Image (cartoon, rainbow, N blue to C red; front, side, top):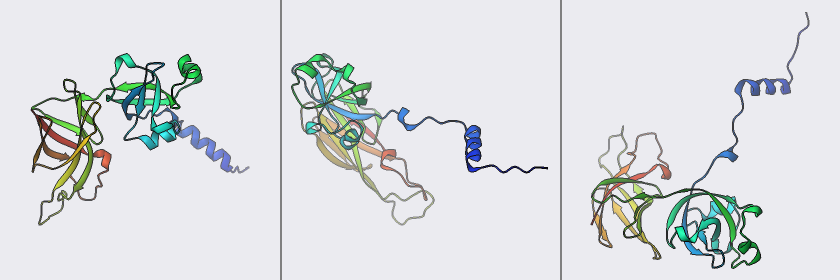
Length: 229
């Protein structure tokens, strides 16, 4: 009886058939935090900055003057300077560029195409709300945002461990109005409030609570707050 041996290539082909195919990472959409910083005077399209994701955008789309990008499909009439958006972007194709951009350029900003838009959640006064890491809530009446910028410290005693001190957590928040510089402030969990522009902000709890043997990534944090007038 003849004996057969499988080559490395044959084994690889069999494994691929058994495991099936997976989609590549190219199909994964990435959402970025964008801010409208101006308008193209010739085309009336929006000029965007990406305060939290500038390096990622440079790698994705390329380097642009002043780290500003011209969104070829966002019209001035629908947006205001200082407004923040969550967007999915890609490089703009030549066929998507308006004639005013190619023939009468008013800047050297790189053109991008916004393929998806999501607005920030509206602020609910006198109610307990949760803000994710680098996320914001928006007050449309006063045109301002309250954001969780970062976690400064988290020394809370983990579940499954006996500690002589309960520990504490503190986070840095950001208050930002349209066309104004942001104001940063630090609050300790459950210990103090702050008053900014007529808002009283209470930091109730930092989530998740630490567990022994589990590392919390910065993007996993959420802040539970209450905002009152």
